[in-house]
Length: 113
Length: 494
Image 1 (cartoon, chains in turn red, green):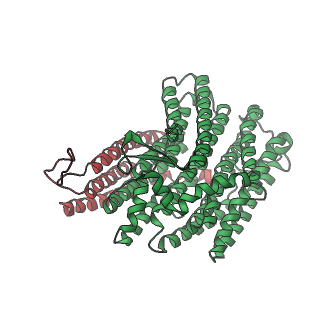
Image 2: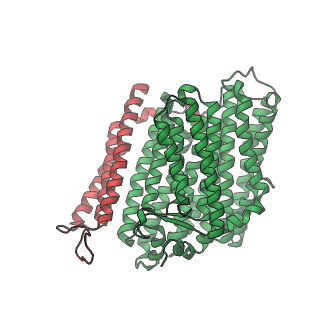
Image 3: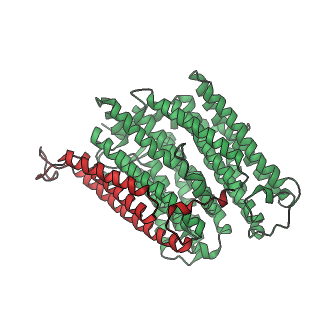
């Protein structure tokens, strides 16, 4: 199971890098979303994926799911959700203001002399 | 007062939440923000003296015993940095009350500034690496708000790049934490420091260490991860730029300091060489930028990179002397960079241009302003007995003590470049003839703006003259870095 998920993480990261390297702002944002998915899956996988066992509820259990990665991934998901929402709004506002969603046209050097 | 370490995080947070409800009451916003910052600063001073008497203070959140719960750890290092950041934000907010228009102030700018301080103080205080990530996000999200406020086209354009870089860095941070947890099985810094030497495959730890350096290097603008810094900082208004330049990059440097000395310095010499190379490159690129530009903001922004490189070199050497130097220089640089950004912001506010060729003769109209800038400039370059000198001296001593000559020589050379770049601003901006009638928006407020700026420079100068008095505190701050056992024992009480 871990191997399978690891491959998924790899594919997600690959697609994310591809999307982030493109020129359209919307694709870049989708890329960052994919990248954070990959990171979150990695957190879960690193805690070990076991099926059919509950988290630690009573003392002395030997077979259990590690609860810590779940707590971590929840926090990370909330943060990346908020940031992605903000990023989308920012992109829309920038599109209105600059009339382009092409990152190539957003280089801007006039302030740098 | 066993809960003392948590107050520098909680007080600004409560004040910020309170201010969320009254965005249009500008006077209330200013008063509450400044009052909360003063109270926080008083608490941090109390914290410094408590730590200096009783040693490292820890708070286990939710009463979960370390290493299972999140622990807040206030050693002298974090107490000093928390106090410095709080003092800085106080001066910057004071400056901002005169600098910003009422319309700007009623758009939650003080709320975001206070939340940024919450994140920075939290990052300095936390003893848990995932909690460090959370506090990073707290100040990053506040910084996103601050950098887009105003909504000009150029600002939005640069915000997108800033946001993108930091979103990627955050994803890498989560990945690095996951890998560390998968390898060592714990997230508390003290517990990690205990267990990392027991890991069989040390090369995995090195890889994770490099991962963390990339993450923190993106925040701290190490070459080659610095490219976002000049563009996105230059578009921010002065008080916000001062805050970013003084605090955000330094949090990245602090995180490298903490994780490197505590977790990743064992094993091989690879990490040390890696950090030294990054430090040297950062200094060189910073020097190039500082002398190449004629835009006053950009000159100071590239000076951030020189400072980051110098501090990182001190950290990488990882000896008692060099770490003392790095900490001295870190606090000095936070104070003086904020002051310089405020000063160049005032220059731009007077002349309505950031270019040196449009300035000149400012000192005849604003003598106090001119001399304040002059002292700040000398202090930045490290002319004794001003504050930059002692840190650099100790770092150079540490480098020579390790038998290395190239690094110390480069640092001395970088001081010349720093001096050249800021004296260039002084000569072209303040000396000479007035180029035209200066009628910038800040001219009527100069008498008030100079007060917080002058006081901040005075604090920096006092820090330089009081270096001897500071020395016991600095030594105590370095102890847990040189001997991680002190830190581990303080957090995990058997």
